[in-house]
Length: 102
Image (cartoon, rainbow, N blue to C red; front, side, top):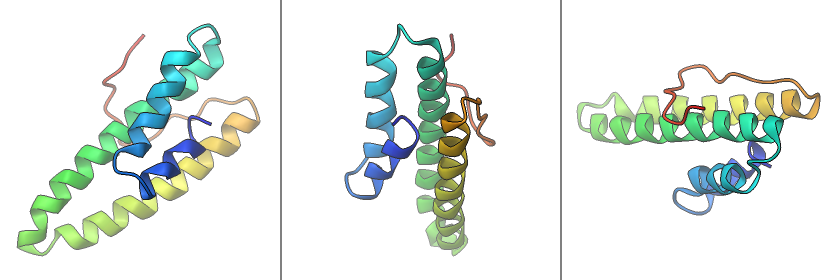
C-alpha cells in the first residue's frame, strides 16, 4: 500500500506523499512495513522536490523534458518497488534523499 498508494498523487495534489506518510505513522509496530513506507516516503518527497525544481526550469525549456522523465521514472520505480515488496524484499529507490531516518 505504501508503494502503490502513491499513484493517488496523479489525482490529488501531494497524495503521493500523504499515503506513505499515513502508512508510516500507522504501522510503526511492523518493521518491514515501516521500512517500505519510509523508503517510499523519502522517494516521494525527493521526486516532488525534483518536479518543483523542474517546474522552475520550464522557463529555460529544459524543465518540460525533465518533468516527463521524472514522472515516467516515478511510475516505473513504484511498480518495481511494489513487486519487490510483494516478494518480501526491500527496494532502495535511486535518487532518493533520506529525509526520514530510523
